[in-house]
Amino acid sequence: EAGVAQSPRYKIIEKRQSVAFWCNPISGHATLYWYQQILGQGPKLLIQFQNNGVVDDSQLPKDRFSAERLKGVDSTLKIQPAKLEDSAVYLCASSFSTNQPQHFGDGTRLSIL
Amino acid sequence: AQSVTQLGSHVSVSEGALVLLRCNYSSSVPPYLFWYVQYPNQGLQLLLKYTSAATLVKGINGFEAEFKKSETSFHLTKPSAHMSDAAEYFCAVKEEGSQGNLIFGKGTKLSVKP
Image: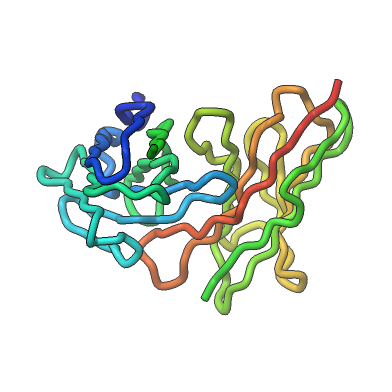
């Protein structure tokens, strides 16, 4: 089966600019997660969707980050405006349900200048 | 709050030697525990998971982990390291009461010397 697809793989922007990441989960997976992985740390959950509804966005900095999964399939994560501390790898993961293992994409590496 | 502690941010072993990566967790309820591996510039791949069945869990690539409630540990082992095992390894616990959120440790980078 095809894995979790993410694009772009790399992105370099200047602070205060905006950026968007895209994720296409494994077909049939109802649950979709966005994680932020800062260099030297483990991934941290930003937001979790169940189909097209938000299950958990308690750690999403809502003043600058937004995410949507309008049709319950692919998802976009946006940062506007970006800050230097947003430099990280943004990982998307999906699972068939919340009790099933999560499958990760290769991530988008974001560098803020 | 639940947490995961991985002892040693960097472990180096010789090819053929035993691999031991340490993970301790804190949880007030029986946890679901996971080990993931991350190769450079890639996402995380599930190695194995503990879900309250057998305490010794076998995973892919010859890895296994043992759940020890008395020690709140879930250490990852492999009897004989291979060069291809060089990667970063993350221990994670499923957040209690959550809908699947994983709390990750900071990771341990494994180097394998020829």
